Image (cartoon, rainbow, N blue to C red; front, side, top):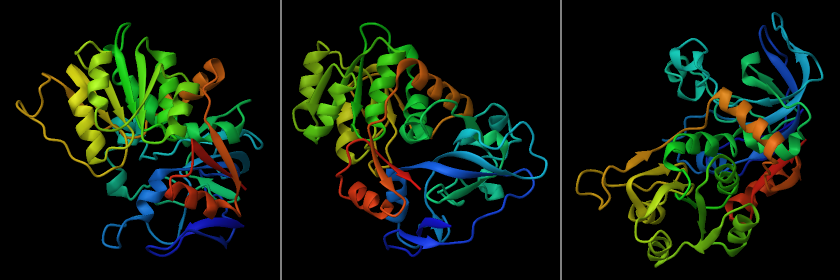
Length: 345
C-alpha cells in the first residue's frame, strides 16, 4: 500500500510503498477515508536527532477516519463497513485515567511504550491503518469523514481546553483566541456554541482574521503592538476572562498574560517554545490560572462529533490526495494554509 512517511531526520516526508498491515487479535483494520495534517507533525519533524523519540520510518497522521475493513480475532460489536473516527491519544486502558476515558493522561503509556498513531505508532496517512483496540474507535455515522476527520484533534483539543474554563465564561465575559489556524477557528465556533462570552480573535494574517469573523468571532484584531490596549478598552479596563493561545511563542504568551484579568485563565494549547514567569509578583492580575491541556478524552470526542451534527461545527478544509500530501506539508510549513488540510487516499 502507499503511505506518507517521515524517513530521516530533517528530510521532507515522502510517499512510499509498504506492506499492507494485517490485524492481530483485538485489532481492527480501517481502509482510510481521510487523514488530517497538523502542526504537531511539523513540530516533530523539526526536532533535532537528539530530541526525536518517535521512531523511523514513521507513517504520519494522528487524525484519522476510515471504514472497518478487517476485524482481528476476539473483536466484538464492530462490523465491517462501519465509518469510524480514530481516538488518537492511546493509553493502557487499565489505569484510573483510562478507565475514565481520559487516555490522553494515561499514567502508564510512557512506561509501556504506547504511542498515538502518527506520533510513534503507524498513522493514517496511508491506504490502511491498524487500530489497536475497539475502544479507540468512535462511530462517525452520517458525518462526512473528509469534512470531520480534523475534529479528532483540531476539534477535540480546543473543546477539552475550553471545557476547563466554562465556569469563567458566563454572559458578560470575554474570551480571546490567539492564532486562528486549524485549531483556533474551530475554538471560536466551540466558544460560541458552549458559552455566552464575547469572542475576540487575534492573528497576524488578515485572511485568518477574515476566517475568524466568518465563523463567529465578534471582534478580530491584528496581533501586534498595541493590541493589549485595544483589548483592555474593549473590556472597560478589566481584562479578559480566558485566553486560549494556539501559538504559545514568547510574544503571544506575554500578550496573553498582559490581558488576562484577575481570576482569569490563560490556556496554553499551541506547541511553541515560549515560557511564562509565575508567582505573586509575576503579573498584575491576582489568582490567574495557567493551564497546558493535552488533546482530550474519548467521551469528549463523542461530544465534539455530536456538536458537529447538532450545531454544524465546521472545519475550513483544503483537500489533498495522498500523492499530493507532501505538498500539504509544504504549505503547512510555509504558513500558506487557512484552516486545515485533509489527505484523502
